[in-house]
Length: 62
Length: 216
Length: 191
Image (cartoon, rainbow over all chains, first blue to last red; front, top):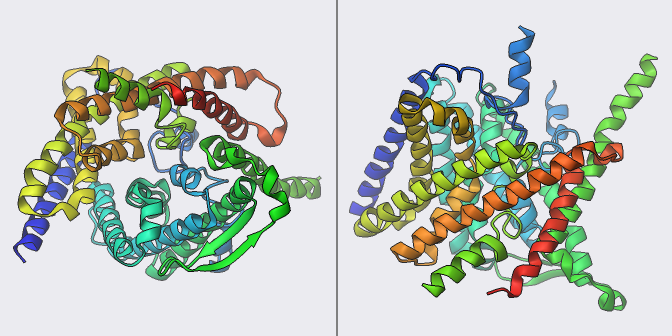
């Protein structure tokens, strides 16, 4: 039974750590000169990924 | 788009494997035999449907800034659960699929559908989308493994994953001397997949051409 | 020493991660259109696999085994990899804009790269010691870089080739990959 508690606590710590890092990373500004760096990756069709070609088209279109 | 169209789109037009090139790692590695293809396909369908439903259910309380971490935790927990269930009830299939079960976590189909569909739609629609996409994936795996298993062994075999009894065995023994064992290796996987990808590209463009002709 | 060397050769050439195990197919097709991006992606993958493998190795043997919760392996590993990628991205954004310029864009693509999770899991299932783990987690992504680079060179040539409409783009590239896999299977007797 102790095991399950450890597991839950451990998962919470790891998940929280990831969420915090994810949040902090996305708040850190991109350094100067790198704002428009994009790699046109068409490896998968997750169109919400910043590297998907359709993203740049949307920005250009606006 | 209505529900039925949405459901059918997963098979040809938006086929996750041949059309969108999602989940290729497992599609290529697992498709050596029909057994593996069925097992893996149903496993992905199950996880995709469940994750779509959960993510859709919590879409209103998920903070937007950290939605990707939330999705990853949900998907990883589901995959762990399915992995343990399979190890317990279908040990042979579990041994055959091996590490690919746990790699469903990073399968782009699941995270992609969570992002693109489940985070914006209701529970029922998301569940249907999960089943449709999952069956589309299963269908593509079956196509590849159908060709590969026959070319490599000159027969098809389907076994029951729970007790390892052979349900169906079709063998063309006169073709036995001509079997090409290369098709069970990675070269065969790439080749078969390339042929199907080209075929689906033709199928996908066909309706578009018709419309153009009509417009003229 | 000789054992470690043959292990590295086997990981790079014989059991190449892309051509025989199909891990990392997404970047293999996605970022192989230019040689420069192939090299950038390859180097980023080496870095992330090394870092994530070392952390997961210690976390598994230090925490999960001691607490008796080995079944948390998968969740832990994927979270470590994802956190490591986020941390690295944040770190080089802040302290090394030059590095960010060349590698930064590839980092977010690596979280969902199955090669990273595979190597982390493989280190545990094969029961590697610390040094073996280091060699394995360096040579596997090295094989990835090698194949990605060769493949991107082939694709640059394929772009100018005259291919039938249906085969344009990915299908013909996959045929090229099949031939490369066939060529690499010739290394099988090397070690």
